[in-house]
Figure (spheres, rainbow, N blue to C red):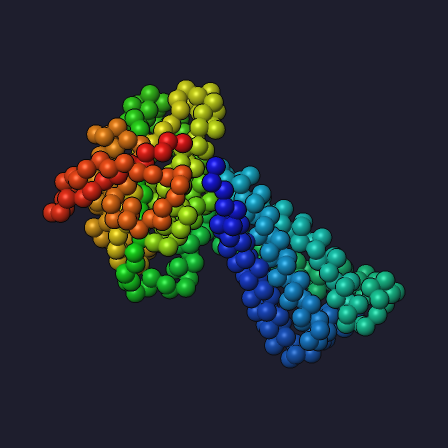
Amino acid sequence: MFLFKKPRTTYYVKRILPFGFIWLVLSWFILLIESMANAYENHRPGTDITVTWTVFLFASIAVFLVGITMGAVEVLWLGKRFKSKSFSIKILYKMGFYLLFMLLINLITYPIAASIELNVSVWHNAVWEKFSHYIVSITFLSTMVSLGFSIFVSLLYSGFSEHLGHNLLLNFFSGKYHQPKDESRVFMFLDMQSSTSLAEQLGHTIYFRFLSDYYNQLSNAIIQYQGEVYQYVGDEIVITWKKEDGLNHQNCIRCFYAMKQSLETKAQYFEKIYGVHPSFRAGLHLGEVTTGEIGALKKEIFFTGDVLNVTSRIQKLCKKFDEELIVSEELINQLTRAKDISFTSLGTMEIEGRVADIALFAPSTKY
């Protein structure tokens, strides 16, 4: 349906780029330590590459690209293959895979660096004589240990990013919300229908796997339409957008229908595995929140404001009106009009916990 490739590409680029910078900074740090230990002299010219500015530039570019390559493999492929494994098992298997991969990279890049240092062709006998000495030297072992350390740090970052969320981790590192700040945000409270009876029917172990498959199926649509998962609360997901991102191209509305369509494409899978096809209802609202880091024993980015309570109440009204999605007037007034999306008024309703009534709308276009 509504496809915008850029947000999805941007999401993956933001996840992959930090690997390149991690490798680059670690390589500079390791080089500095080794240079200081050797008094900035090459004591093993037969195996070590003398660092000139040309060699340094080549090495920096090569290391950054190696980090990017590892990040791409981790984010797009290998990370998904070990998703169900424990953190320690992931580290163990991935370390083995990446060490073999980096060994190959090391054996390829060393002759190139040697040719730059010696100012001769990469096929020159002097390059390969130096290479033959290198692979049986302590320098080679030291290089592999350094690569192993870089791999380990990258995998730690990958693990923390997966468990905490990429944006949350970057916000912690940047200190963006170290001091509370006011923001205008769109919130969606999305709740699975008949979840209590499903949990009883499937049993808690199978229901857990069911929820995992359900969340995984919704994730691509959230990425595609620039949403962020704020919380998983049982069978409920709280999704948020910065105001501009949520309103742009009606992302917050389109995200709902993209998630719905994603579930429909997997209906046969859910019916076959679990004997049921999940569905959901959602409420959407826009408002001001205060955002900041909170917690003593465990830090997290926390939103507080009336908008969250109102959005939750709006979602609960979906059952009363027999609607799959209800949107507040505040959000409707901010959305740019689209030919393929129109809304029908549900009237003005009193929202529990709120003094002023709120006008509610439901999309009249069904997808």
